[in-house]
Image 1 (tube, helix red, strand yellow):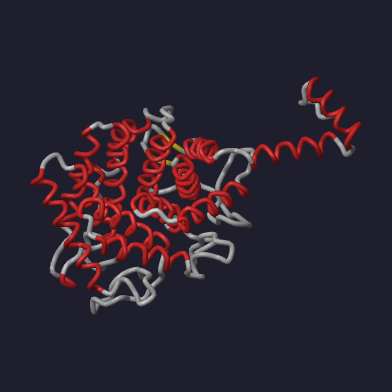
Image 2: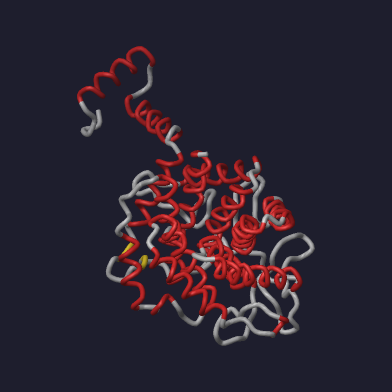
Length: 370
């Protein structure tokens, strides 16, 4: 008999073995498996987020084992979790990050406009949770810097970095998303109109660049001739645009925005290079996705969930729950770590892979709560 088992458990186990057969160890393992199977999505998300926070460093306001923009996504995940579950235990993290992380990037600005966009979205999410205006003001300040990346090269759009050598999809998707989110939260009609103008300009530019290919999938960026470079269709490029279009639709009620978003989402779920035969999301970099690709899949699921709030779809819900279930089945019971791959063999674990997988668990909890 295992020394850690209580007297009551040993007696109950003895009865089961007497009348049913087998061993106490077999029965205990079956009981544990049953317990895992019946754990709610909210409970799963709580365990995943608790593991994520083991990497949080209050001194820096960032997450060890991962990078600057990944930490912004971790904060977004944490804010979404707190909002969906009403769990208040992590409220103190946000002011710590707001204060400490600026030592690395004053005003949360750096050379890369996409990094800035991630931090702007993070602070918008924290504002929605806390209603503290300093977070929304920070997001607005970051967006003001992002607008400086817009010029007439390729007829518009913002650059990926302040080196001004590449216009890519992700920076412009983030620009659209931040503009639409700020419009929804603007304090007066003039500000709202300004942000909506930026969001509309961005989307019209994006539509006419050819970044969305004939398969309704978004390639990485534009080449020197300002045409689609046909590089990898990463999962996060298919995702961020969904959240941006969903928010812009909520402001304008232009049906075409939802139709475009639905085309991209449906094409992604049917794309065999991104979604396997079991409905599990992948990126082509697996199992070695460096420091960036580890973040991508959670961003897709997070934004698919945003789209599903304004355009409910049973297909979207099935996809979200299928991926959350697969992630849960691979989480080690000892520490509830989440690997880079969302199906066996699961792969390496760090703060980036954890926050990405947590996005899916939080999305499932959100769907469960509806």
